[in-house]
Each structure stands twice: as structure tokens, then as C-alpha cells.
Amino acid sequence: MNVFWGMVFNWVIKIFGGLVSQVTPAISAELNAFLTNLYKKALATENPMDDFFVGLLLDILVIPRPPPE
Image (cartoon, rainbow, N blue to C red):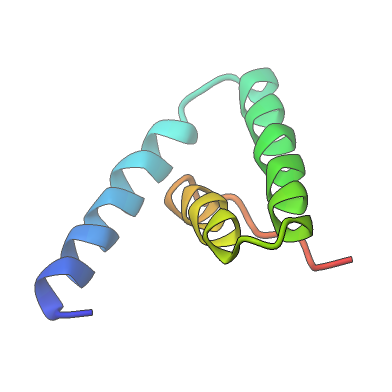
């Protein structure tokens, strides 16, 4: 990844991470549970792009990835 896209990605993470930290705990918990469950389902598929896409959403929203089962 070149330097420009690295900076853009870091900027996006900071913006969305800051937004998520401002929502109510109930909404944050629901979003966390939804994306965590979606990530587990993505890992169960054969398509590696599923893993990448949902993992990217987790990274952008600063939600830790659950360990593989």
C-alpha cells in the first residue's frame, strides 16, 4: 500500500472510530455484536473476500476481531 492510501485509511479509522465512540452504549453493543457475528459467519465461508470485507469494517469501526473458533 502506498503512503497516500495508508494515510487515507488511518484518517477513515480515526473519523469512524470517533463517531462510534459517541453513540449510546446500547447501539454500540448492538453494532459490536452484529459485526462480530457477521465476521464469524464470513470466516465460515470459502470466499476470502468475505473475511477481508467484514474484517475491514471491524477495523474501520475500531471493533476488535474475535479469535477464530
